[in-house]
Structures are given as C-alpha cells and as structure tokens.
Image (cartoon, rainbow, N blue to C red; front, side):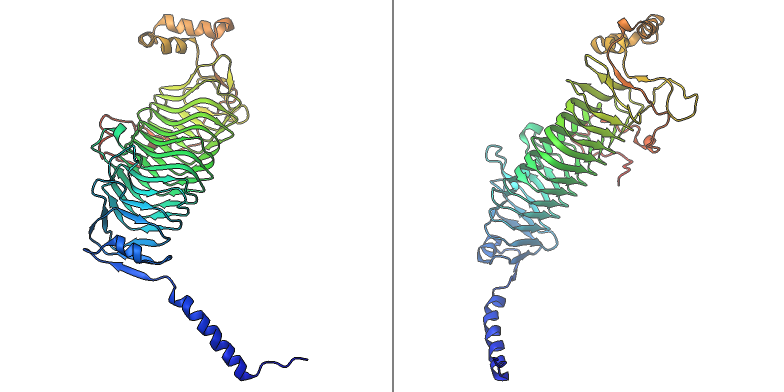
Length: 444
C-alpha cells in the first residue's frame, strides 16, 4: 500500500504550485489612466487584453481604433472628438466595453458610413453604456456583430443637416442577440434602423424628433417593449417581419402613423398606447397576428386597414375619440372581436341585459364613409338630410352596403380608464426640429 507524501514533500509541492501561479497573476488585467494632453490611442496600443483604460475629464481630439478586448471608461465625462473626419471610435475586436464617454464629431460621409462608434463585423459582445454620442453622422453603426449591448446612451445627430443627409441613431445590420435598452435618441434620420437582425430585445428607448422612431425590416423573433416614440413622421415602422412581440409601447404625436405593421405574420401586438397621430395603426398585408388590449385614442384615423389584412385576432382594444375609427378598404367584411369584443366610443347601440356587451353589432364604415374618402368635399354635407337618408338606405338595403370591419360583441365600457390623459397629444409644426416636448408625459 503506497505511503502518503512526507511533510517536506508537501511543502515543496505547494511552493512549486505557487511559483507556477505567479506569472498568471502578473498578467492579470491592469487599470491604466489617461490624462488631458496624453494619447488615448497610445494607451490602447500598450494595453493588454482585459485591461481597463480610465480617461480623465478633458477634451481629446482623436480617431480611435480599438483592436483588443479592453474597457474604455470615462471619468467625469471626457470628450472624444473625431474632428469631423472618419469614425470617432472604431471597434475591431470582440469583447470591447465603452463606458461614460462623450463621443462626437464624426465625419459626414454617407458612403463611408461615418459613425461616432463603428462596431465592425466580428466585434462580437461589444458593450456601449452611458455614453453621449452627439453630432455624429451615425451614432452607432453595428454590422455582423452578435450579442452587443447598447444601454443608457443619449444619441443626437447632425441636427442642422437636412433629414436625408443625416445618419441614423443606431444602425443594426445582420446581427443576432442584440440588446438595445434605455437609450434616448433624437434629431437623426431614423432613431433605430434595424435590418436582418434576429433574437434581439428593444426596451425602454425614447425615440423622437426624427423621420422614423423605428425603421425595421426583415428581422425575426424580436421583442419591442416599453418604448416611447413621439414627434416623428412615423413612430414604429415594422415591415417584412414575423414572430414579433410588440407590447407596452407608447406612440403619440407622430405626423403620419403611430405604429405601422406592414407584411407581418405570427406576431403579438398588445397593451400599446397609440394616441394623437394622423393614423394610429397603419395595417397593411398583415396575417395571423394578434392585436390585444391596445388603446387607440384621439388619432385622425384610428386604424387604416388594407391590402388583404385578414385572419388576425383583434380583441379587447379600446378605440376612443378618433375622428375616424377605422378606414377599411376591402372586398369582404372583416370580423374583429368575435370572442371578447372591442370598445368603440362612437357605438350607438344599447345593452338591455346589462352584460356589458352591446345588443347590436358595430359596423365601422358605410357607403357614406367610402364617398367621403374618395370625395372629401362630401364632408360638408354630412349633417344634411340627403346624406342621412343615404346612410339609412345603406342600412336597410344590403345590396347598397359596403364591406366593413364588423364587431359582433362591442363592449360598452373601455378597459383603459386613464384614456383621457392621452387626449390632445398631437404633432405640431416645428416639433420635428425643435426641443419641444409635451407638458404632460405620463411615462416620466
């Protein structure tokens, strides 16, 4: 039977293990400081993978290239200025963290896609957190880089440029696993431009004073949650996508649509507030999608529905005080609310049994509505006996009836009891280029 090692042998074994461990501790991550007047790029070049470079408050003219997995951390908000040329910071390596910096003054070449921070293909797991990216063409350009985290940044563009000559706040292309959370983005072309990017989360972002709050296409299995989009031309524009969850967002005061759903399948759109837009929802070529418990209030048109949007489940929504609840162009009736019904503030039926459901079905449009869409001057005659007689004839003689959205179970009361706070939040001239924000923001 083998004998256990003698005490002296155990001591020598422990000493040898300690000696082997020393080089690894010597190569552990170091923290390096950069002070005003010193070169950040030199500190990056000298750093070892895993090092932290702490940049003291100051103004640093530089176009940085980060080619190793390190952390750039600002102390008291230092400013990195790209001098109006190229990218202010280009990230080449995976696992780069950038925190607490003011990053500004990129070049303005749309051809070269100049950005405040350019995360190039292969720079996976980049993290940009609590930075101010200002007066850059693109705030962040992210391409073929997976599992990036963009969190808590303030991004503003070259606001003195015409919209078409600006870049986007965050451009995300051909990625998976991105987390875009808690950012405030405005005065750019599109606040979020997303293409071919899957399994991502977009949460708690504020998107405003741009062309689109979100310009989004060809992307699947993503979550949009708790975002605010206001004073844009369009709020959330989701196109050519499937398997989306769009919940608890607020889209208000946009000059065109609040939420655009175009060519979408197999998605859930729920618990959103869409208020004060020209068109609340614009729904075009949408199938097998659930619209549940949304508040659509005080829009010029609550829902613009067209292009064969059918086989959708539309339940428990509140349509309140829209000048036109639904504008539907189709060849046959579209049934909404077959299970639980929706609330329509202009419903004129009754509830004799007191069960909360109207006894007469709701029809969104009739032949007079169709006439006013084609000939807007007819609106001048809406209160005339002739137009009222035409409406009555359309109701009594089905041969003159036009296809409409039908709700067989209209609910007598809304489920959103706070709907009044969303009245009056309309787009006004100048809002797209000014700092104006509504006096009352229920989310703040």
